[in-house]
Length: 193
Image (cartoon, rainbow, N blue to C red; front, top):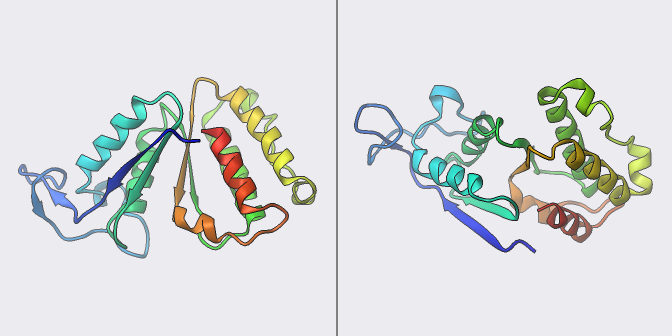
């Protein structure tokens, strides 16, 4: 079980008093839309939430979960992308959009995303032995393959905690079951925390 969940609610973005759009208490035009996340200079107005999340993550050694919620097009996905970029030296951030997947696709996507992140951040000699099982093998024993994969990941990343960032988290409850149940996936994810 997860002992505590930190809640962060997003409202309209704010700009700062120096003209920089990070801390001022007046509303600014909303840069967050449907086309793509606001990154770089387009990401602003979230310093309070951003700081709270970073402080919370840095002060947790394990068993941490954060729920970020707010209305549509308020900047949740942009905040998640920005956090993943900012925290990449202290964590192994893996971003997954959970919209419209089956349970098997979710596990495959999760393992593939972790493998790609390891390959891009770790020395080749550290991550070469971590491979995503072929789909046919995954179909036969999805959870066994997932647990074996995650054991290898945890052995390789002992000093770099996995930061699993699930966008559209509420859609995990809508995963169509294929070869593994949603409850089995939830239990497996809980065991990682």
